Length: 310
Image (tube, rainbow, N blue to C red; front, top):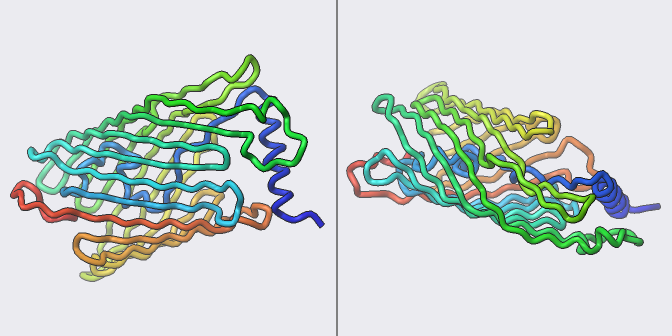
């Protein structure tokens, strides 16, 4: 009896070969996150300074655990308001690996905030940086024989990344629209094979905080993702916030997974989070779960212009 691992490897080989013969190898979309509402800078540069204090977030995601070559993502982001309380600055670093593909992105963000009233504002942001991609198809553990044209493919390229977004914040409602990648690009390997290194990405997301009583608040949220040439995808969920210290939530990622979310504010400055994603699609009996870990730290300021964090 053929093991599930061998079946997966052969299926991956068939997909890779058919894609190459069609003349275009497409890059994957941006890394996927369940804690996107606690790491908004990574999808929207307009959020820079959104915590009203110097904020640092570290995240690790292991997707489809147990599946060879499954996505693994690590991100680091740091951002803060400038002294005039109207400008935000941020830095984002992302390391993403999927099978034979490796991506490293470094982005600087700038946001300008326009106040609507004391507790509400709209912010506009841009970001720019570099993305380094490498793909080594010869490293794939594929059944023999391997097409020599694929065996020799070894991609290593650096490209410019540009993105933009807008963000609305009120005491209860948060809305964002962004394109972390504004431009598409590709590289030609030969006369018949090309690889799409970048594809434009578009996001719309929002959340609403509804008080139930003095101790409990409900927070529904949604994220809509669009990539040209791919079906529209979305995440929708609801969280309960207990005494502004503990958050428990559940969400549904369209046709893909059910996600459980847990966050705890250990101190007024430290927040930790964990999520468990249960994959609804059967991937050869493997990779049915994904795990994500998040750590956020807020640095307090003595500057009178900056309000207390959160």
